[in-house]
Image 1 (tube, rainbow, N blue to C red):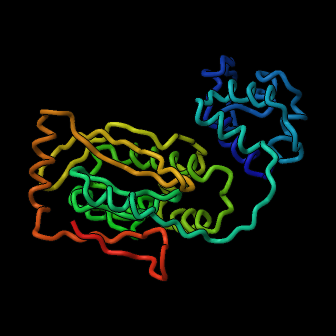
Image 2 (image 1 turned 90 degrees about the vertical axis):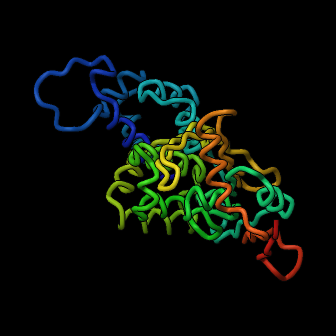
Length: 291
């Protein structure tokens, strides 16, 4: 267990108000959220033991204790699973950059899908994208990064009617994706860069929110077709370490389907080329596919 458990507990208790926990408020409180001793009391453990947990001095909290803390801190299933993962004993692995590559068959599928589709790595890197995805957002190209685009590019931010909510969901999904590997070099690079460049990212990252990278309904404000409401699916690619296939699709027969078809018509050319990073089968790591 690393200091991450203590950081998580501290961040999450600061987000729970006394009213939510059923604690009467008397006088002026000098700390946000709950006090340590209040969390301990509500979880049925001693204040000294909880202090040791927050300071990383206890390495073996039981599942029962963690479940009690999850209840007090009002954690949902994703955040509870993250808490258990932070407390689990795992052998330390050597930390070195890992290059994520797209299986050739998956790259071919993305290129032929008649819907906006792209491949997303564990650190929100775009590993492949088809032309309709790029038409949806010009930032959806191989080599891009969803975190950088959303937090640093005003044009990307303008695509979302509620940009801060979309940003919060993205950060929570990123934290779920990297899990306990927050000392991974790629994670350190991204978090450091964005913490310096974006006060919003810095604030959201400090919350320690966790959200599974799952399907959802996403609304875009597109400069060409206006409001566009699409279903988003995120599908795990088997045989990879957390790489996802992301596909957007409209409801059948909807105005959104007509708008997406209009957007797609602008991308149709005699030959469309797509750059992807492929699973190496020769000396080349990048292959160009034509559709």
